Amino acid sequence: MAAQNLLPQGLSPTLVRVLPFAVYMAFIALAELGELTGIFMPTPENLSLLYPVKALCTTVALVVCLRHCPEISWRHLREGKATLLALLAGILVFVLWINLDQPWAVIGDPVSFQHDAAPEGFPRLSLIVCRFLGAAVVVPLAEELFWRSWLIRYLQAKDWLAVPFAKPHLFSFLAVNILFALEHHMVLAGFVAGAIYTALLYRTSSVTQCVLAHPLFTLRQRMKGNADFSPKHVCLLEKAWAITEKVLAVPPEFVPIFMFRAGEASPISQRTFRQTLSDLSL
Image (tube, rainbow, N blue to C red; front, side, top):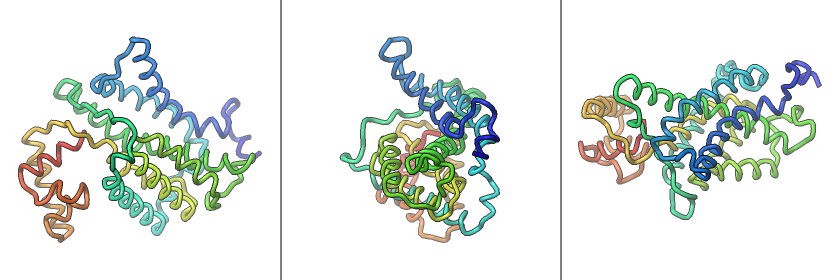
């Protein structure tokens, strides 16, 4: 196959699409193994400090592999209608995700990200930036490359590289999105998000557009309940929130309801706003 001949010896089309995700998941498996053997205790603080290593290793795998994955091309973002659709899909997933957290629709307890595990100053800032870039760039690329570039086509045909992205296939649709859901703490929300991204793939034939739609979903997953914001950060974010309201020209309660959950951050006040900020782990 022509696409295979373009790859360096030893790099198969499957490997370059699976490796980044496998590297990321390997760190999760190693943390579990470390707990079983007593070598490493996966406390929120330890996992937070390990995150930069996990993100860096996954980034290296992406740098090596993406050059051999032509379906990931930022030129696809020049297609205005498809890009707008991807952004709308991301917003839709964000809104649905925060309202699909019923107890019966979740598995296990999420581990919160402890940005204060690093010393104040540059180390903590670096950890926050690393977490943000990991959630907004690294994870979406690794996941979409695995789920919607490789697995969804691999399940359809032996010659999976020849399978068009726009070809709906019931078995691969269900299999990929069920597995995608089980990867996440909020299973129902994960399935809905995966289904929307797969529908976006069918509509745009672009994995890149799925990558674009993914960060809002990933960032919302990282919102936990124990962040500690300084008064300066709260003041800056309050100002940003006020500017957002003016730009959107909507009632003050609309933005908190839209971005979080009705009744949780409305109306805006110092107390409720601070409580809303405590949901963020950045």
